[in-house]
Image (cartoon, rainbow, N blue to C red; front, side):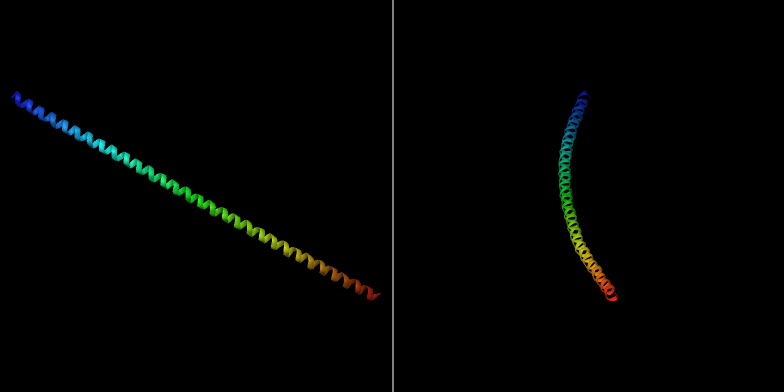
Length: 111
């Protein structure tokens, strides 16, 4: 009987050791998989961060181009405004001088 119990104990001990080794191997495998996933996630995050930075830089470049275009258009409008303003003053001055000349001529003819 004692021999049978020792044999069963030995068998249980062997099974327990096998299960323990299997469990340790499974844990090691899971830890390796977790490390791989963390690495992949870090790589994905870094790639997305890089893409976001590139997209932001491209948007900033486009925004600067729009600002430059707006500034150019404003400068062009100011130039056109100045040109028309000068034309208006020139024609208004000419009209005032012409009316003044006509008034003086009319006054001279009446006297």
